[in-house]
Length: 227
Image (tube, rainbow, N blue to C red; front, side, top):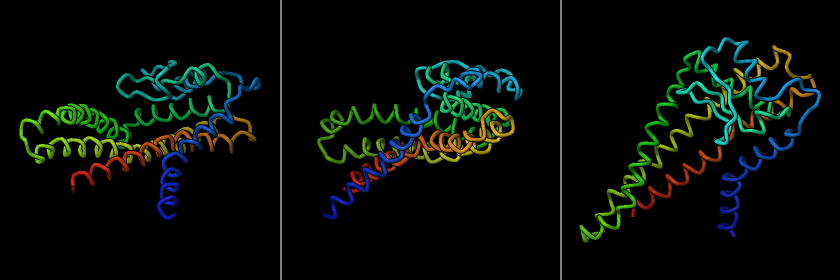
């Protein structure tokens, strides 16, 4: 019984935030004929209005994100072309990241650098783990698995650190950048401001499930290392 409750609690922690994010995005994802422009048009307007020189706005199949290396605000097609409250809020959130970059916001710089490091470690870790059977055969000893296990811990740990650093960056983009811009600029009707806060919360919390999953993976690899 206790195991069942613990399993249910763990599943709720892992998938609850993800389900809530999708639910909020879908709830406010219907097009609004009363909106004067699409998410992409709002992002492009804000880019120009806020003096984000060198930043481009484009549609992307790789999800909503801001690329600080290419200086690109990328929006999913439904947010780039859509006139929904979700499209508008998500566009403002990604512009928030562009504002962070423009202001040389240190946590964003740190996250960008950590992502690059983590990707390198994950590629290396994947290669090392894949060669583990060969190492085990060559060494003919269980200790030959120590290096692959360490590589797994390092690569998973690096990903977990990235997710932990990401959350405050996302919250800053939503509530210290995007929300003030939307409210001061009068881009939303009064009735849409509270729902917009929910969407911006969802945009910021997208990484919570990934962070929890990363910590669970790290715990699993550490257990393997202790055996």
